[in-house]
Image 1: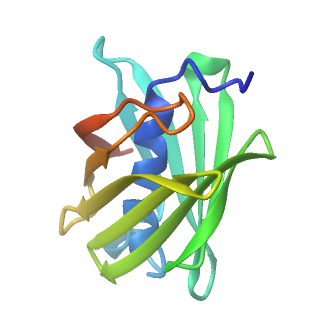
Image 2 (image 1 turned 90 degrees about the vertical axis):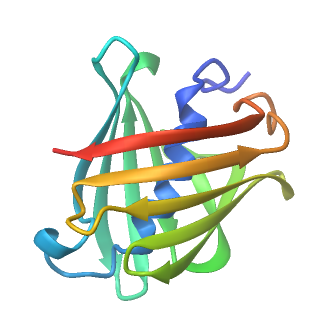
Length: 159
């Protein structure tokens, strides 16, 4: 049994990664997404913390800390060119991948797969000042039991 099967927010985290990776090539935090963002649970407490850092030219790294799962760490490194990138949990492969495409400075799209089978898409949009990130998710299935099928919208706030 994978440790993230009971974490509904993992789905959101991975989809948000797509949007955050989209603009991570930019050098400064004031006009780029590089930094730390928080998605809050219904009770207002931080549920997931996401750190975006530039990995290298044409690549970005996202690191999520999921507190509800004993501070599980989810990591994605993407080339931002629509190629599959593995999703790691606590440094181990999960069978899940994300193919992130950079559309422009504020927008990205992502295809999420489990063991090579597509089960979801997302669109990410940063506010012009990079203070918020809105992600629209559309998942056709639960993707191995780790996500909820259907449409959802998530809001991330820069810290």
